[in-house]
Length: 465
Ligand code: 4AD
Ligand code: MG
Image 1 (cartoon, rainbow, N blue to C red):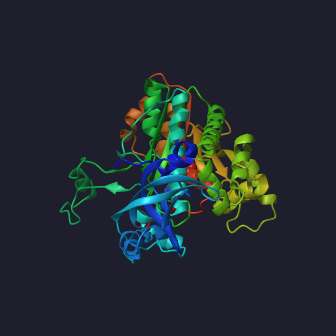
Image 2: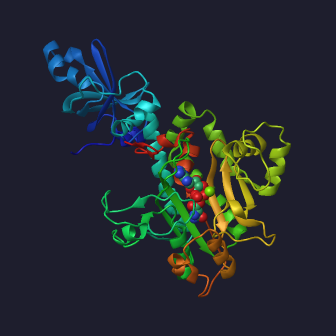
Image 3: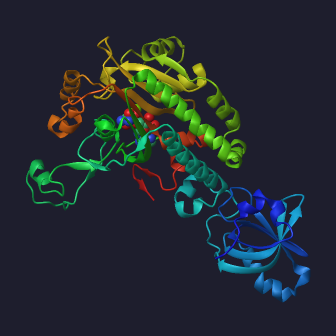
C-alpha cells in the first residue's frame, strides 16, 4: 500500500505543504465540531505526534458524512486517508481530507477506551498496549538502545557471537535453570539418571542463565574481544518489579583486561548507549520526562556527564552500619546486600550510579578472580538509583587450581566443564567481562518502574500472556 509515513510529514513539513498525500494508521481520538470533524491518526512511526485529518461536513450531504465518514471516527479503527497537507498553527500540519477508506473497523468492546487503563490491565492485552503512548515510547527507546549496544561494540572492535540457548551448564550456579525435556510426564524410568539418559540430549539440559562461559571460551579461544546479546532465562520465583523469567542480556568478554579495565569499559559503554538514545529518541525521552519520571532528562544528562562512584564492599558495609537507618535485614560483613541496602547507597548516599567492588567470595560465583586477601573476589556490581543492580561484572579466575577448588566446593561436575577449564590450560590470559540486564537499563532510561512494562510480552512467575 503506497503511502507516506506520518513521521516524514512532521520531519519536513515544508516539503509536503500544498501537496496531496496518502497516509495510513489507527484512530487515536476523534471529534465532531460542526461543520467540521477531526480525526487524530497514528501509524506507529511517531509516539505522540498524530496527524489531524480535517473533514468539512459542509462540503458533503449529511447522508454522505454519516455513511462514508462517521464510521471512520471510531476509536481504534484503521484507515487509509488521502488529502492535501496544510500548515497549522496548532498542529504544525494537518490534512484536509478528501478521501478515506476504512481498513478495519473496531467494535465497541475495544479495550483501550478514552479512560486510562491500569498497568495491570494493559499487561493482559500485550497485543494492544503497544498502541498506548507510554508503551510506544518505551518500545522505540528500547529499540534504539539495542541498536546502540551493537554500535558501541562494533565501533570498538568486538565480535558479535551467537551462543546456544540450550545448555547443560549452570553458569551462575544458583539452581535457577529451567529444564527442557521431551520426556512424557509419566515417564517409565525408575531413576533420575535413567530418566535423563532417555531424554532428548541423553543428559539433563536447560535454558541458559548466562552466555558467559561460552563467551569466555570464544574470547580466550582466540577472538580476544566478543559480546553476546540475547535472551537468557532464570526460574526465580520472585515477584519483584525488576525480575523476569526471560530477560535480555548483554555480555561482553575481554581478554588482556583486568577488573579496572572492565569497569572503565562498562562505564564508557553505559554512557555511550544512553547518549545515543538522547540524540536519537529526543521526542520519546521528552515524553517520558513529562509523563513517566519528572526530571528524567536531567538525570540522564548527569549520568552521561559525571563519573560513576566506586566503592569497596567493605566500605559500603561501614557506610550502611553508620547510616542510622533501620533496615529490615541486618548489615554485617559477608552478607549479600538486599535492595534496601543498595537503594540507600544509590538513592540517598551517592545519588548516582555506583560500582561496588571486591565482594566476599562466598556470596559470589565460582569463576570470579580471588583477591590476594583470600576473602574477596575481583567482582563488581553496577548499582543505579531507583533500580539497584543493572550490571554484574568480574575479572575471571585464571589460576586453574583456585578455579577447580571453587568449582568442587560448589559441587559442580567438572566433567561438564572440561572445555571451559581448557581455556586456563592452553595459553591462558587475564580476562574480564560483564552482564548487563538490558531490560533493567530500559527501565532506568525510560523511568518506567516495573520491568513488566518494558517488555511487550513479559514472562514472570505464574504469568505467561
Ligand atoms: O549478575 P548476573 O547474575 O551475572 C551474570 O549472569 C554474569 N554471568 C554476567 C557476566 O559476567 N557475563 O546477571 C547480570 C545482570 C544483572 O546485573 C541484572 O541486571 C540482570 O542480569 N538480571 C536480570 N534481569 C531481569 N530479570 C532477572 N531475573 C535477572 N537476573 C539478572
Ligand atoms: Mg548479579
